[in-house]
View (cartoon, chains in turn cyan, green):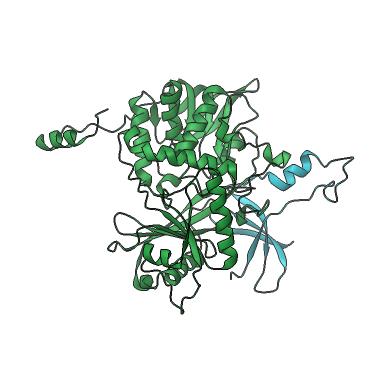
Length: 75
Length: 418
């Protein structure tokens, strides 16, 4: 078991997601949030979970080319 | 191109091997081509070959930023199979397998395709049920699949730990006998030589730095070796698809992840099949040089680093030793990482992009190598005719908006879980 587990890109959840109202479907912004990514080669802000420690979520800014951590904040 | 044959080898031997011709030219880029393919790996080179062979289009350049086949084609664990659950994937990979079966003859180049058999090992009744389901799905698509019991596994893999003391119990397995391995470099070289022979320019050390557009359509590329105009541009850059798409202002449902693999020191032949354990997430085969080639899961976070964490390799080796205890004293010789396009449903994307003349072949996750021939075949069809090939009609970008996802594992929009 690894100490930390990954939670993907740290994104702002758009208004209009679930619970869904069939009368006004969420649209492009929701598709973007669920599926599309910048996937940067460089600084990437992402979520991590300290699974084998304090069990808190936090956000990290990491260079995906070198794994150098640029910044950390509480999620 | 010199036709390779026993006669050629004999003749060359008698002349002291001084008359061999280069397998492909090293041309300078021309100012303009009808089609530019970005990426000189297996997929890009196969696409070029089938554009020439199936569609008579030879005014084509393959642009490779480094040396051809030096990306994921040069790094994979060489497994070829069509043992997929979902129709869209099974049918695609089966077409690829059929192309593999005739490939050495077609290319006049030995790609060392060895149909030694690919065995999935089940460690629980639930896994056996899963293999029943997968086997039946394969057979419904006309693909060979056979269930195996413990005795069958023992006969196929004499060093498999079937004892009561085994760390992970072995219930049985599923074999695709027509699956196996191929020489990964040979595929790149075979397609390169055959495409070059048909007049296609393969241009190495040529990195695309920008896509040129005018009035909503592609007009060419900027590269480190100058500007090249083109009517059509096809992106075949495993792991870097997002970076190329960003040059056109597009975002894809892809995350780039590192996938590691390793080889052991060479030993005498002891494993005659490809062995895969779903629960342990590892795959292992023995190369013709005697090395054990092993891999497992992606590391699990976005990465372009082409290197990963040691604990991932530890898990692969632990799992291999749990299955084959005699490997415990083997030295690991070399490990490496590659960058793979992990999509939001674990299946590839072969599509026109929303800019006229721009095409994408990406999202291959960790299954690109076996798909090399069919990816080239279907992308060539798409580029030549502007219509998706029937085998890739479902591998669209739109499926991420419509919900028609191809989720083999059922893991949802978390690419690191696929």
